[in-house]
Every structure is written in C-alpha cells, then in structure tokens.
Length: 198
Ligand code: AMP
Ligand code: MG
Image 1 (cartoon, protein in one colour):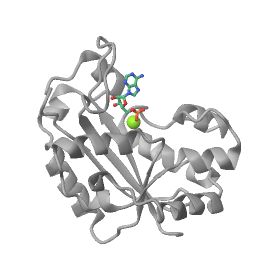
Image 2 (cartoon, rainbow, N blue to C red):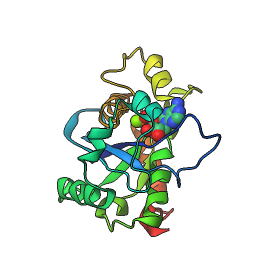
Image 3 (tube, helix red, strand yellow):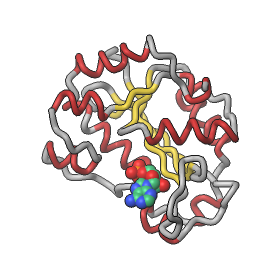
Image 4 (cartoon, rainbow, N blue to C red):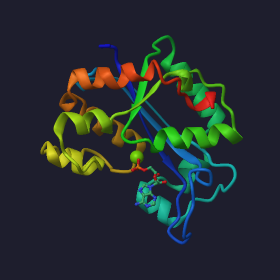
C-alpha cells in the first residue's frame, strides 16, 4: 500500500420461487472489476458476463434484479474462460482485491470447488471493505446503498450490475480511513486465505 486495489462485484443466478438456496447453487453471471487507488480514482476497468452451465436459463426475477438478459449470458464465456480473461487484464499488476461484504469471496469459493479456474487473480488476498469502512465511520448500516446515502452520494448506474456496483464501491474508498484499510490488508498476511487454496 498505497497500491491500487481491485474491487470486484459479482452477479449470480437467483430465484424468487425457491425457499432457500446457497452460493453453491448460484452461478456467476457477471464479473465486474475496477482497479482503483485508495482515494477512489478508477484507473482501469474489466467487465464480462458469464454463461451459467448448470442452470443456463435465467429466472425472470434474476433479469429484473440485475437487468442481465438471457442473450447477454448466452453469448458470454463460461466461468473458467472469463477468469482467463480477467487474469489477462490484471496482467502484471497483482495486488489485493476487495469487495463490499464477503458474498463475492464466498461465491468464488463455491464455484472453484466445481470449476477450478487456476486463476492467478484468486491467489491475491481478499479484503472485505465493509469492515474498515464500518470502523472508519462508526456507521452500523453497511448495505451499499445505505453506505452511499451516509456520505450523501447518489448511486450512479444500475444497482445490481456488477460493473456499476464496483464503480460505486470505489467511490466509498476515500471514506475508509487509510490506516484501517492498511490494517485490514495487513491482517491478511497472517491469515492465508484465497478461494482456490481451500
Ligand atoms: P449484488 O452485488 O448486491 O448485486 O448481489 C449479488 C448477487 O446476489 C445478485 O446477482 C443475486 O444473485 C444475489 N442477490 C442480491 N440481492 C438479492 C435479492 N434482493 N434477492 C435475491 N438475490 C439477491
Ligand atoms: Mg452487484
């Protein structure tokens, strides 16, 4: 640090007519990623839809929530190919990756069990940005929209689209106390954790 940070936001298959399901049943349908400085300047972006293979048909609910359509995913690469493209984009800029909450990390862990990608990206340490944000602001409500509202920021783009979510998360970085972010990243060095390493 202050190295740039990759911020990832995943979208995945979801349903409103299933009483209960886990990340193991969900499949990634979008990988949105921005490379941002700790003060929130976006240096580069990567975005791809991903074609789900176990249940290729998106529910109407999922399309309504994410705005991602059946034809978006039908013409998209499958997960392992999408991760190959992500790696090519990251190229020689490894660092750490963060997400808003732990969902994205857990979703990678789940899919890596069934579709190991060997992605170098997932060898990078992960930080849950909600934690240092919460410590920095003392604010309890950590949903993305609530966090933005706390700073009087309007959400830009379409909430629940991976790339738009990632861009908006980057806008919260200036409000994360730099030492707290560093501490969260520093703690990772003693915690060996990466989705492909489990
Ligand atoms: P998000 O990053 O908040 O857009 O959420 C990531 C994924 O979590 C979505 O693509 C959905 O699969 C699932 N998800 C998020 N919000 C909901 C919701 N209100 N109901 C059902 N699934 C959701
Ligand atoms: Mg999202």
